[in-house]
Each structure stands twice: as structure tokens, then as C-alpha cells.
Length: 206
Image 1 (tube, rainbow, N blue to C red):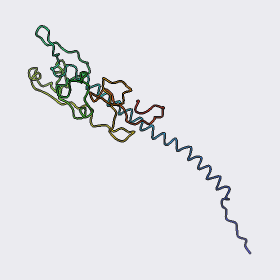
Image 2 (image 1 turned 180 degrees about the vertical axis):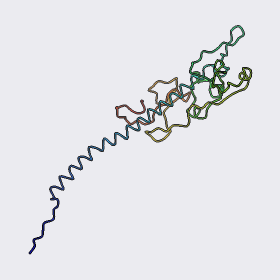
Image 3 (image 1 turned 135 degrees about the vertical axis):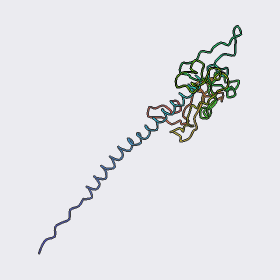
Image 4 (image 1 turned 90 degrees about the vertical axis):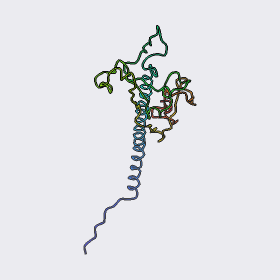
């Protein structure tokens, strides 16, 4: 009579050892995966904050000489005095209605203004520069009526940490530790999340 060969298999002990090893591997890789996702969100937050702060600074540069066609309101000897401008600024904001009497520093009143855009005029020294939107205009036309609208942000950014556009703001008249925005202007923007990042700092402090 032919003897049947035993079918190979795992013992209970071997199964327990295998499952234990798998559990250890999963527990070891799970934090790494979680940190990778968190690190990606942090990178997006830093980039979003950088873009908004650059837009705020660019807006502020364009307010030098605002609402006076590049000159101050004060005159000496009956002639308007030129306002020093940042060489990076090619236009000057020409809409005084967006600034209230408290916003003397002329930072944007809110983020939506950066998205909607504001009316601007080409600065006199750059009006006929190559590639200028006014390069085909003469000086008389430029100083008279031509206006363009400049947009500083393509859209209202979403906070990667909260999933909403619920940013915290600080005006130029507030300190860094002020929690409640005075709504005078937007000097700085921060995340609304109080969670701590991988570096141990709160996202709202970035």
C-alpha cells in the first residue's frame, strides 16, 4: 500500500511569530507615512504663506505716491514733489477709495482686494519702457486717463492645515502676539491652525 505524504503547513507558533513581525513592521512604517503626509502639507503651507506675503509687499510698494499720479499732495514752490518709489514697482495704485482714514500705512484692507485687483497707473519713469502696456501711448495720453487693473493674487488661497480660507490677519498697528485682528489693514497673514508642526512650533506662529 502506498503511504500518503504529509502536506506541509505552518504551525501555530510560526503563525504567531509571522503576525508579530508584520505588526512590528506596520507600526514602524505608519509614523513615517504619517510624517510624510504632514511634511507635504507643511511645505504647501510655507509656499502659500510666502505667496501671500509677497503679494502684500508688492501691493504696499505700489502705494508709494498713490492717488496723486506719482507725486505727493504737498507742493513746494507751486510744483508737485516726486515720491521716492521702490525700483521694483512699475505702477502706482490710483484708487483712494480702498483706503480708509485709519489705514495710513496703506497695506491692503483685506485679501479679497488682492484677488479683485485695483486700478493703477504706470509710473512716469517707466511709462515708455520696452514691453510696457503703455509703450504705444504718448505722455499726454498717459497722464490723462489711461488706467489698468492689477491683480496681486489669482485666487483666495486655502490653508492646507484647515482646508479653508480662514486665515489669521495682523495689521501694521498690531504686534505679533495679537490674536484679534483690528481690521485696519492686512500687514501679515498666518494659519488659523493651532496644531504643532514637525519642528514643534504652532502653524499659527509661522
